[in-house]
Length: 295
Length: 339
Image (cartoon, rainbow over all chains, first blue to last red; front, side, top):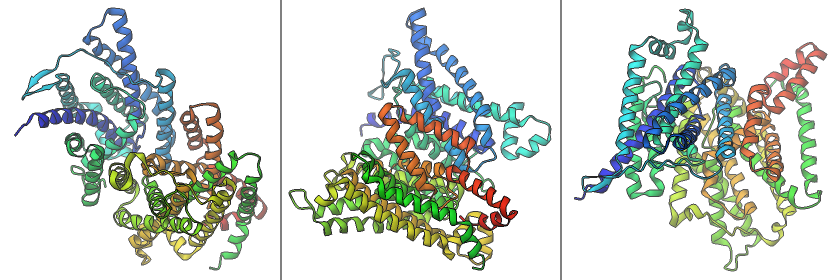
């Protein structure tokens, strides 16, 4: 049996899974803490891709082209987008906490439309991508883009870092406590509004990181966010709201299933993901790793 | 119902408004040019879709992000029968045309029965997610099943019979069908069944204590809403002369949600007023700029932040405040469980 095409699909599936994880982790945190389902999450990811692109181009012009210029560009984009996330929570999202779910969805969906057009205004309608000029390497009788391993490595590193942050640091423990009981955390004298802004900024920061890291592999184009956000919803629900481990496992399931489905049903690869989502929602609506309590 | 009389009195402004709205709709084709007649047809069809969505959202309290799937199913059912019935030269007789319109709602209702069977087991965000997943699944099936649905290309050449090719005539056909549909919907929402829906929206557990079969009633409402969405879909194909998979997608569902929230989910005719505002705005804004999403996004943002009940919700609040001043709160309270 020729394993080459399967190996190729596996690696591209895993790198796709990492992007889904980075986005869904933020989505899940924001939903867990604030009960806000952020429709604009993937759009913020897209914006950060464009921001990274502009920074990369600028730095390359100033200091000469080098793949390493991607690093400061990503750091810059993450910082900028986190600030934007902080401001969005402060000035917009905050006003909807007391509202019904559809109104919250609508507010973040309005942001999808506004940010999408803002991209069109600032960067135009052409696709943007970065060519790092990395040579593909030969592996298992096929050529693999080594940058995929960078993405997979970065994704796993962030997953571990996030776990450490949530379980071993003070702020992380406060965030987890806020998921469990907001009023109790507030009663302990912890400034909940600050926690909210911080978590939103963190979530957007993770998305921004994903946007920057993925840029050399996939061109940023208008409208991609609409596809990605529903897949992220699928990941969060399949894994279970509030469960980081679940989000991680579900990202890998969705990423790998998607890239293998492409082999035999190119147009319907996404249909497979929604089929899994339907089965999970019917069988255990609280997700694979979620608890029945939160359902 | 003992309280029927004061309710009807409190609802009088609503009725007057509906009559004025209908009169305005009747006058639209008299405007010079075909532009506003075409826009008016779109307002009516998408308004019917939004009205059917509001049966789930405003009355049953569940938000569906896959409602356009039934709009699309109705559109495709009509388009396929239409294509099968039309003669080789592309023309179609009036009876065959009306028959192809009739097939939309039942097909959509069957789809809604299957999807709803699973969806009504869940509520809130899980209901929204499952309806989204089913909607997207149906979208991708239509999108990729090329031999049956023509996939990405959609079905073209849905030219209605000669008489209905005139935008004015098609407009009046649409208006007649939509008005009848809305009257039926009004009957449903004001029936005991409609009041069970309000109970399910406000407190499902209490409804169950009262002996109401929660899932069965939710499913019935889901199927009714699906059938009306299918009717809107049936009208869409011959109106735009084609159908495409995009009609089933979640962005299309989003339009129904927008219209409902702009107009006001708490008022019966809210969604169609939302459709008037949304579709007219779109027609006008698109004449001047390609940045329509930015415009509508900003409007939605402002509505969510400053006009939570939608435009009609705001109007209703004003009317109630005035009635409250007149009769010291009595009239306002009688009207508060209305809609």
